Image (cartoon, rainbow, N blue to C red; front, side):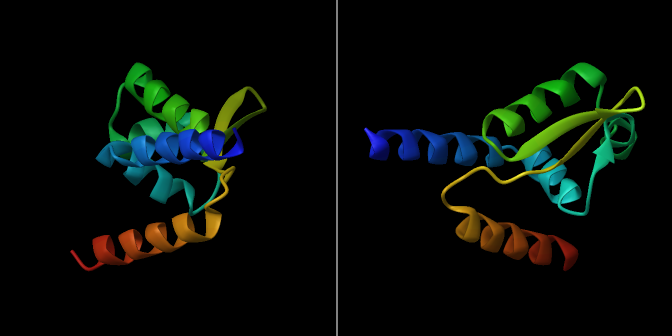
Length: 100
């Protein structure tokens, strides 16, 4: 039973990272807490689309959301058993993208 839950969490993480917009959002959030409004402007997404992407990342345990002063802020939040491996993959991805 434990293995099945771990497998399902891993699938959710991989599914969340399989989309280039969500991967880009996650890399942005690795830089620090960012408001929903700033993410809309940075990625030129409509609010509904951004909400869906962030919800997928939240459901995968990769992003957290807090409200401060009437604004919604999102940040990288790692809730996975494979945190070290995921951080390595994200680091490699960021490095590859910076060389483009």
